[in-house]
Length: 289
Image 1 (cartoon, helix red, strand yellow):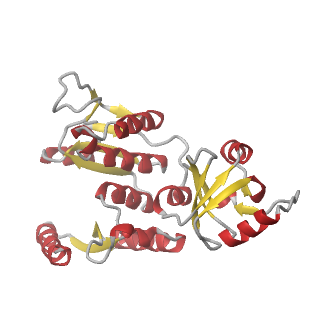
Image 2: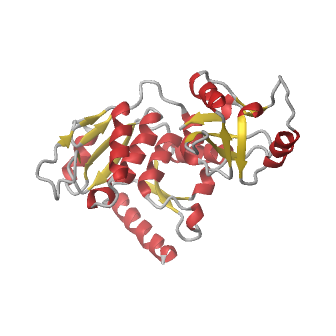
Image 3: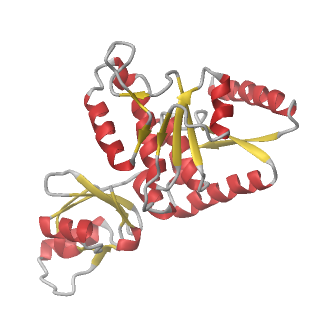
């Protein structure tokens, strides 16, 4: 059904864009296309090259061949990652409400519109919303938009959420009018590479750290050393992405390991006490989450 639908969808885009004298291109992506640094760069180069040729890329998830493990499942997350890959100025999220609200405005008369969100406020709003997933507001699409806003703003991209049912809104956004809800970008963006590490890659294993190692990577910008590992989970090779957890199994970072799970286990089993502990995840390929 996706294979049939994609043809019809693109013909509609082509018909409408041709009226404006604009050429389009179809770009179908899955998680696998962003899962290595090279493939992320290639996607970025392709999208930027199309735009330099005055061709508008229409990006969609490759539902035709992607299984559940390879799918993002929502276009909000995909759009945020594309905005990062492009180093975009702004990500526009169209929805069926005029603003972000403090509560579901459809069921709460006291719901207040939120016109502007700074990055330190976004995390609290997202976590509050995640706790209310049983209600309509939590499952009505706003959660994925908050996640997308967090991904984009952390990388320095402004996000504007507006009501897509009103055609004038898109024109107003391009005229820099402050309509809807604006999510301001971080003052110190994490950068393209760290954003890829945090949000785009799919991990294949877990490394659990003691308190000292957690403190060092979170507060001192340190690399992850073998001496700080108390447990590992999963089978992974060197140069594969892993989740980094504290001893309470809460994620604190993601990174690319320089050692395989077997190598780490062998050294831990031998209880080698080496003052020059090996680097398992270098700080250059480690992103706090």
